[in-house]
Length: 440
Ligand SMILES: [Zn+2]
Image 1 (cartoon, rainbow, N blue to C red):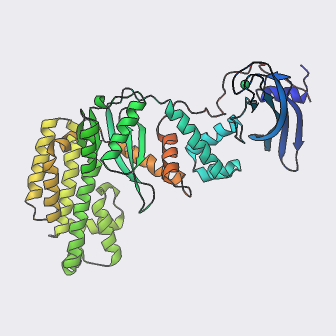
Image 2 (cartoon, rainbow, N blue to C red; image 1 turned 180 degrees about the vertical axis):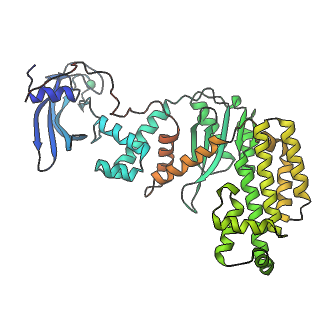
Image 3 (cartoon, rainbow, N blue to C red; image 1 turned 135 degrees about the vertical axis):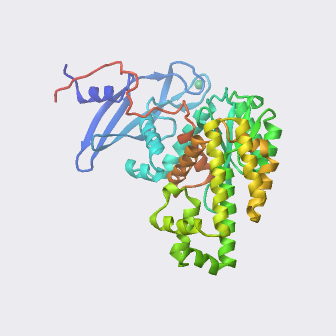
């Protein structure tokens, strides 16, 4: 088969009549390849009203960045016809099959940009593509909005509600996950009961049913509890173990800080040393699981466990609560979990450590929801994985971390949206022209 370079590239770009490549210019010094695309037709349907066979009024010059061709930066250029319509009287530009209206990127280039942004920080993706990061952010916003508009939320029954901060010290977002489909359903600014109502509206708008949500896993915020009662009337609340164990860690830290402040001599005697490094080792050792202790942490924890310090008691209480959770996870039996939690609460109430007595009161008041959160592994690996993904998402938005950008990229990466463009590296439907061979 003997083909011209223009025919070859017309096929490679997936163009069909009346569009074709008229000219190819390869500039090795500038590492650039330019394609001049032409429209050979004489008439076109009116883009505004659809009236067929309208005459071409004039042409406007447009340029699009395309996927690199080997090591060359590829550009498409065309004189795009505008038709003057006899039916509606409007002058409108004919749409081109390779790009969205008004975009300076081809569809394939946009698809590549999106797929890079799912894996890399946006600033880094922009660097690789040699475009301004802002141009990628506008594409992310566009495609995520389009894909979410078609998102199907039927069959949502178990959700997790959590808060996250966009930037240190800045405003909070509420995020809602589908615990079964393991994806992000919704994110919005704020963390009051209204955010739950906003989620319920969004769920309904996507074919879901707020009354069908049977289970909500969340932290102990009273605002979320109110929001759930109002907007998700049939949902049983369970408090997830990460927040409960985090509260136990906070209680333990409060005991340790207080003791170090008020009894520095006793702490020093028990540990044999009070230099900053040892005390830091103690702080981290107490927070971590024994399997994760470093050498210094092991040492500090060795002496702590042999002491009569309040900090030692606080550490044992915290570890015991972790074990209550671990036991419930393996038995998955509500009676056993309730019994173990009751035993722990009674110890905590009598422990003479004020922060743990307070925690015991908090957990007693919400006993049933705490026990529910211990069972079925609902809140376990997935919530942890989601928190990891949220952290990566924050990294991905570094330098451009506005609330809107953060929400958009969280949807892009965590929502398993089905209506996003495919990465251009996955072969789409075969071209109608099939395989072309060209001997230069
Ligand atoms: Zn018209």
